[in-house]
Image 1: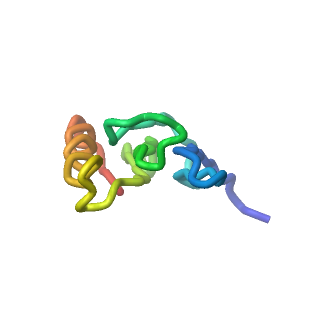
Image 2: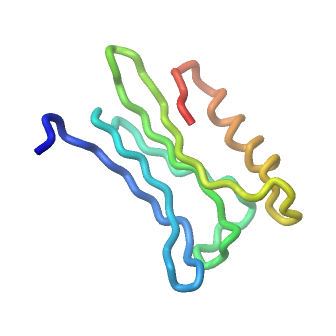
Length: 102
């Protein structure tokens, strides 16, 4: 059916009312590296305010590319604000000079 293989990574973040929520990345290129990046101060699987980013590294046309799928908090959340989570992610993505897609 597909001419090329599809590589996928899925990470479940937490449970909300007995439903698992998560983030995923699909790639037609082999995934060379996977990173789970905690963004919130809480990391309890059962806490709905747990937020994470999922990052992968792929090689496309001899160029290393990093791709991130994120699940961040609301902008005005008092406990887990978006701005604080963005600062954590921004610090991580600036560590290397690879091409980045969010």
